[in-house]
Length: 116
Length: 117
Image (cartoon, rainbow over all chains, first blue to last red; front, side, top):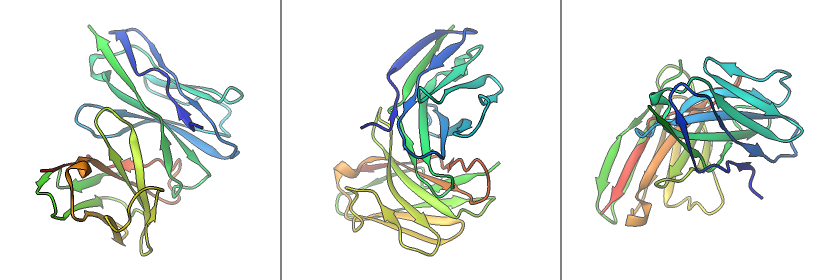
């Protein structure tokens, strides 16, 4: 079974609008972390936001927020006020276990295109 | 921030030769480093996890004799693709994490594009 599922291969959004990128996960480990990364065409992976399994509140980082619904096992990324520079691939990833030595499992990614 | 560099950024080699890719953490000590492979328009696939001073742990299906990983210091890990073939052409990305630095996100290098002719 897929551990991380991103069901949207591609998304379009108008500049200055908000967009939600979906991510669902599957784990039986009570301690896990969820990450979102952005990958522009240059290939670098840019860390955007993190949500821990025990966090009570949804994570926010500037224009990025994470809609964490633990019971549904979803961790959707919300980008507010989209900018042209937001056009990129976005990957959701999960770390099972509490430590930094634990590997990340990536979803298939969503390609976001921001239109002027 | 935490900066990870990779060298070279692009490499073209002939079939049958070996290629070494370096991954360095520039401003922190990386307890654990990871190597990923990414085919065009696909996600990152973890190849192996390496901890400084110990043997790498390879993911299922990854040939350890073909993809040699050395993590000799807390700031350097190398991936050597031995006897490269055209099917090894891919984008290779390393990442590093720091024990004790919550939330333990992985810091990624800029990637190395390998083309085997």
